[in-house]
Length: 114
Length: 115
Image (tube, rainbow over all chains, first blue to last red; front, side, top):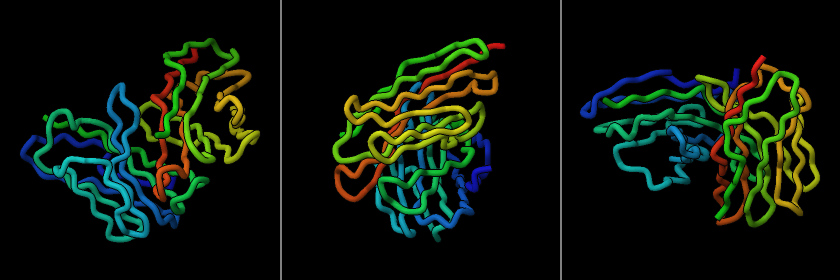
């Protein structure tokens, strides 16, 4: 039990669909993150939000659109994805942004693009 | 930029064997170091951390010591169990490159423990 929840846990979508991933943290943290985990590749940081403001976009294609309405919720809106976007998408949160702040991860959403 | 290198897996051990997973890093400034574990079908869980040189992080029988002189943070456990089978990630956060404190991960090491 990590205090970070993600829904849905599994998602299959076609390339023309629009879907959203949701992340919620119950830890009172101020920073939230999206990561992509593909087979045989290191975890890739996608986006960072601190106090609801986006502080990092790691050259992510525009077909991924994040939204952070408050410090507890983070969304990733998906549209016109490609098969190579199939991966495990992990959300994380931390008390703030600093050297000693560890990140707490959710269980992930397993996305399959057909 | 920052980087983390950890030993390639997979690592296969028998129950009660000694475990070492090597991790070295490159970073400017004074990074904090972490080990995360990912069990099958789950997200990453923080296993242990160390925030300064010579600190030892420990949890669930696992230990790692922050060695600045060798830029290493090797993970050890004296007696592994089948339930330790998972992927282990070494990671760091540094204050290099401005105010964004990024968590940089190694590629992960798959550990399988057989009964």
